[in-house]
Length: 98
Image (cartoon, rainbow, N blue to C red; front, side, top):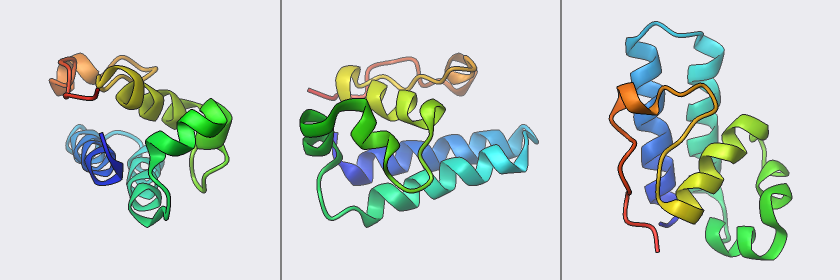
C-alpha cells in the first residue's frame, strides 16, 4: 500500500460520504487527507514504521479518526473507520497491503 493507493481509498470514501449527504466537514477532511498523502515526500508506510501512529497524526489535516483509518490500511490492508461505515461502503475486504 503506497501513498497514492491510500489517497485513492480516502477520496473514494469522501465521495461515498458526499453521496450520503454526510457532514461536509467530514467529506473535506477525507479529501484533505488524500491531498496530504499525495503531497508527502516520504512513503507513509516508512513514516509509520519510524514514528508509529503519532507520525501519522502529525501530518497536516490528520487527526485521530483519520490516523485510525490510515493505520488500518497500512497494517491490515483493510479500510476501517471509527463510525463503522466501511461495511456499507463495501470496503471491509482486504485491499492487498503486505
